[in-house]
Length: 162
Image (cartoon, rainbow, N blue to C red):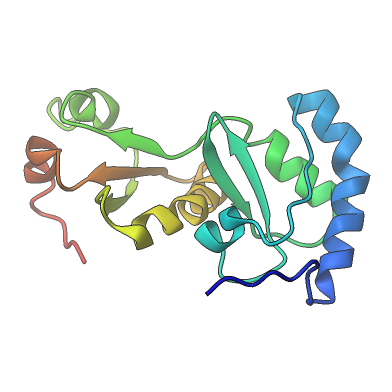
């Protein structure tokens, strides 16, 4: 169903808007980013399960902000993650990125398997970027298209996949 409401009903909406407005200048100066308020946006319904939400799109890849309602935290999270964090593992780049064939290590990997026809997988993309932003100094975060990356999947045969 479609709701034609004109504003957010959550009391945190005004706090988020105020803090994002306070962070606006830093975001524009450091990231050359536009700050846009969207009410009743289909993007909200696609990428978040609650309102308010802040999404930062980098080259079309969304990052869902899940931190404190603070202009400093918002600006820090986005400036530290101006490029997408989650790596796309494919049959072509798997060996290079993971060093699996050489026995060398590139560290731990946290991998999400997805498919392009899965709506929940698309919804999870912005949250998966948030996970990657949080963990990027401790481990690699990646995703693998389970429909198209057969060799890549077989190299991970020792893993438990849910």
